[in-house]
Image 1 (cartoon, helix red, strand yellow):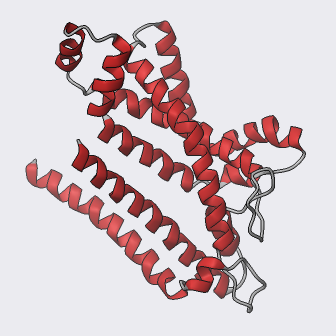
Image 2: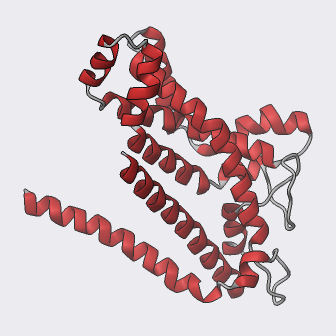
Amino acid sequence: MTSLTAICAAFVTGLLLLIIGYIAIRGFSSINFQFLTDTPKPVGEGGGIGNSILGSAMMTLLAAVIGLPVGIAAGVYLAEYGRNWYGNTIRFVADTLIGIPSIIIGIFIYTLVVLPMGRQSGLAGGLALAVIMIPIVARTTEEMIKLVPSSMREGALALGAPQWRVSWNIVLPAAASGIATGAMLAIARVTGETAPLLFTALNSRFYNYYLDQPMSSLTVQIFNYATGPFEVEHAMAWAATLILVGTILIINVLVRTVTKRRY
């Protein structure tokens, strides 16, 4: 069984390396400074994904600012106080949201935000990503907090610390590494979403610094390049995919390194 599990682990790791390597081979040749900073242009005139990188960063940051605090707070509640019907209801809703196709959330935000505003926007895109992020962070945080030994809580309570301080100063730091990993998984999940952004943020061929206007994103730009009829567009799609995958990989490695050193 040890050999079998080792083979399975090697297979999964090898599959991941194969996918990343194939993307790197197809996309590395098209990456240059102009590609990273320029905007899309007609075929034959170059072009790049600079506006898409900025748009994805802004909407992901907005989603993280909204989704991470709400998700972590919900997870703490479920783990520390959610052993009742209300907590069970929240768990059921969170599990249901995790399984809902992202395009449904895109339609929901389209109805709730886009139609009243009269246009797609980066704000709507960020809200859609936040809705996808919240249940993932909440359930991951709950499971990580449950792994904290009860003796740590009991020791703090025995010293006279109130419950809220035990959760803030004892439980959260002890589970920080797992919570950070779950947060990065949620960020990685929403960074790769395309369908909800087609309904909410749409796209833009220019740099846009305002969240109330249509905004480009890496995933939508990859979709546009990949479905184009020209080979040069396909090459740029592979390059943009490499940038997206590399960014997610680097963020995960940095977060795991930092949290491992601190805790």
